[in-house]
Amino acid sequence: MKSEFEKKAHRAAEAYLMRKGYNVIDPSPRSSAIGFVAKSEEGAVVFISFAAKAAEDMAPGLPEEPCSRAEMEQAAAEWLGGYEADGDFSVRFDSIAVLALGKSRALLRHHKDMLG
Image (cartoon, rainbow, N blue to C red; front, top):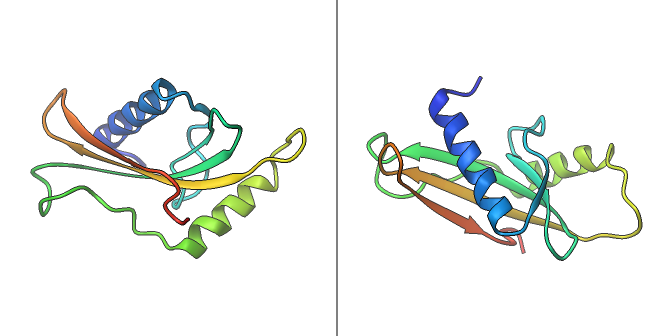
């Protein structure tokens, strides 16, 4: 179960993706390895890992998602098993890390094609 902090950070990351032209097609996939599934402006299905922390919670730096390539690819394969698509499409793996600096400020890193 997500804490209120995690929910707020997740909503902020989703808003960021939408501002950048992504269509979030699954904001809460049932996987610990994937935080979002979105469609990029180019039409790629993008599986996005997500991690967040408050600046005062841990060691300095952005949070890192503790999942492996195999875990992300397995989660994507399971998700794609139920996805209805028209035609061919590419798949990409991204990550978003959010470091909350205060109540209304955060540092967000979007790493595109993290497995590429």
